[in-house]
Length: 121
Length: 141
Image (cartoon, rainbow over all chains, first blue to last red; front, side):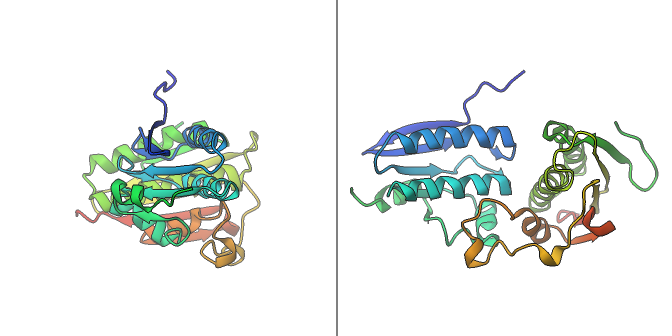
């Protein structure tokens, strides 16, 4: 049976879209495409989108997931928006370090720190 | 789908279809879990297996439905050995761009090999790059 649980849960706080992953694995390409679609819609609906991705539930991710995140980062930048990543488990953070993507993304230890890291429009 | 021999108890020949990868991935990871691998080595094998299978289907066979991917695995309490072979044109590792180079950081692909090599203890490319053999020791053994 098809998985009917949306891969993301989205809330808003002070104009910042907070996105949580509902699955602990971001490996499967169909799942990654679905996440990309939802994030792209969130970027498209605002002039200067502010997105916080909370990785608290994520235990596994693939290079395809990293590619999707880079694409989302590029889209946010094109719209002069801001993207923050937070709450990444050490094992997952290591993947960002190995690929040097910790230099590309703004990664904060906690969601609270990420929320205060956004600059006002 | 699976046939057993002494060297590699798990053997699969699958079509170049992303949906066919799940069962192979699951069967091998079930064996890893059954042998109570440590968290770090289990994480490493899961990631490298995902990347290796996807590389074979997508970049090796280029999703050609007439081509197959052959996978062999031997999981013991000590280590996991996985061989993935596609029917594509192969590749030369030396000519694969470094995804960590400044000019490639914004590119959306090209990190699979880097992750496989970073997380597995041993990686060997043979048959012109069509065959990759990966070994990871169980850190809980």
